[in-house]
Image (cartoon, rainbow, N blue to C red; front, side, top):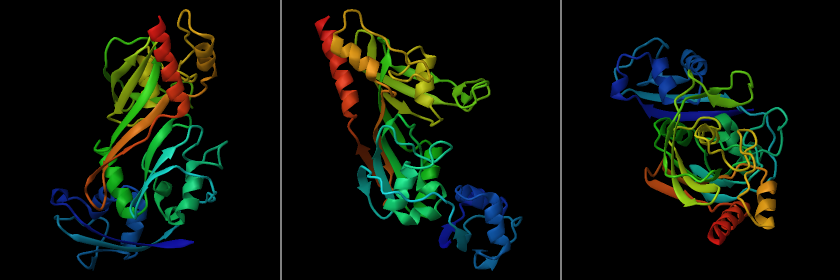
Length: 318
């Protein structure tokens, strides 16, 4: 099945002397350069009303019109899975992802993913790369995600994300009683021996995480965490790197730590907390059409709230 792609864009003046295929790759990052080249060769892209070769150079301010056919990029099936929709309009969809939901289908998780649910909720997302999903959350992490519903919105939001203009704030409960907030700057890449994991590696991609204390407990700390970059497992890896792994994160060292003299209820809660105590609490972005700043909030899940409450009571009692 194919879907029509119709788009009109203006080439920025700062792209002067770039090849048209290079300029388009920057303006439309969701499409491969080879696909854009094919559209140019086939005459499905015009520049100022004329056919251009991929190697032709722009001067800036050209009008590019795309009138192409795109084969649907997804073979995954729509599934009627309930979603917690925080906001929706013609351009974007903001959802509060549940704990345990995988974002993208992968080996071992082909069904019951967020992508499957989105294809049922908004069938037209099948023609967008990654079904319009702009950023990810790990399976065990809950919270806010933005999904683009159009190519224009998708391109705009991906560029905003690359330029660190989308603000993502999290709440986390970590091991250890921290003294103060701070910033972690440590590059992240694939683990050298455990290829399914990420790690701090010298030649990794730059990664920056800011954190501040919300509440300090006897043996744990409740944090607000803000991402400057968005590497895979970034917060989890950075917190472990500074010796304060996230509660419930068995993958990156979040072992159980029991405060001395803790109640039986708190001990049981800590032992049964089987996912990272990490939640994407706030999302601030510029709307792709309105160009207005929008902020969305989602309360932490009940199990997170219960854990924070019991740690607070434990601290007060000791």
